[in-house]
Image (cartoon, rainbow, N blue to C red; front, side, top):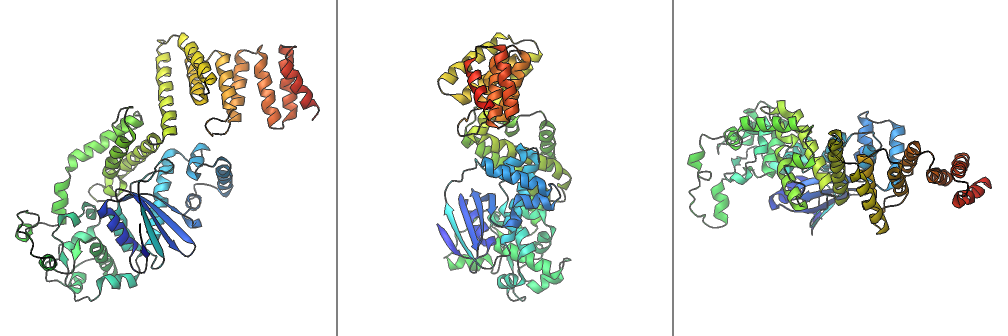
Length: 500
C-alpha cells in the first residue's frame, strides 16, 4: 500500500505514477471529513466516489435541471428500500435512460477527480489489487487528459510557482517517446510551447513567444513538467547521473534526427484519420441494430476477461477525450454515443446477473422473431412450461421464471403460463425482493384468458390482503368461491379478511 500527505505530492503526480505503473487498485484521498475514492484498472481511472453532497449524482442532475426535487426524493427512497445504486434506480424508474446514466456518471466522475486538483493538504492511500466492476459504470478515463485539464483549470498559483520557480530557467523536450503523449494534440497550446523548446529559450522567452495569456502558458508548462514531457535539464545530463548511457541507434532518441519533427508531425503518424473516420461512422450506423456482443465484436461465449480486454481497447479508442482535437471534433457526438453503448455493453456483460438477464432477453427476441414468421410450433411453449415446472420443483426459481416467461412469449394465449409467472414474481428469488405489481399483472392476464379458473382470483385476493387493501381482497376471494364453491383455502382466507 502507498500512502502519504497531499502537502508532499499532488493528485496530478499520483495519477501520473499510477498510469506509468499500469496499476490496478483503489486510491482514497481524505481532507477533514471529506473522502473521495478513485478506482483504477491498468493505471486508468474507471470510477470515482465521494461523500460530498455537491459530488452526488442527484445534485448534478438537479443543477442541470434534469430532475425535480420531488423526483429526487422518490428516487432516494427507492434506493434505500431496494439497496441498489442511485443510478440504477433512476433508470429502473424511467427518470433517465441508460445512455443518460453513462453521460451523467462521466460528468460526475470527472468532477470528483477534477476537484482533487484543488486539494493542497490531506492524506492519501492506495490499495493495489483487482477492482470489481459489477456494481459500477466503468468509464476508463484518460489520466493524461485529466492531468492536463486539472492542472490548467484548478491548480493554485502557489502550486504553479512550486513547479516552475525562476522564469529565467531553460526547459528542454524529453527525447524519450514514452513521454510524448498523443493526447496532448487535443490542446493547441502544448504544440505552441513544444515548438519553442530549443535548449536556449527561457520560460520568460516562451511566455513572450506564445499567443495565450501568461497564466495559461505557465499552467500548461506545469502540466508538461508533471507528465515529464518537458524536463529542466538536457537529457544528456540526466543520463550522466546514472552512468554513461549506451549508444543508441533508435532514431527517436537521436537529437539530430528529430530536428524537423514537432508534436503535430508525430501525432499525424499515429492515426490514419481517413480509416478511423470510416470506422467511427460505420460503428455508429450499426449501434441501433447491434446487440451488446456485436457492439464489442464478441460472441456470446466470450469470457469475462476477454470482455474486459476488448472494452479496455475500445473505450480508449472511442473515448470522448480523443475527439477534442479540432481535426476530429466533428465526430465527437458520434464518438460519445459509441462510448455510451460500449460502456453499457461492458457493464451488462461483466455482471453475472445482468448478463444472464440480457441473454434471456436475446433468447426471447429470437423466439418472437421466429413467431413472426409462423415457424415455431406452440408445442415448444408446452415444453418450456414443463421445463419450468421441473426447475421449480428442483428449487431453481430463477430458471423456472425464465422458462415460464419463454412459454408465454411463444404462446401468449395460455393462462397457465401467466399463473406460473405470477406465483414466481410474488416470491423472493436469489435475494431479489418479490415484484408484487408484476405478479398482480400476471394473475389478471391469466384471468382474462381463462375467467372460469378460480385460483387466479384467490392469488389476487392474497396479494390485496398483503397490501391491506381489504375491500379488493374480499372481492377476489368471493369470486374464487363463485368459480369453485368447495375452495377451502379461499373460504378460510375470506373469513380472516372479513374479520379485519
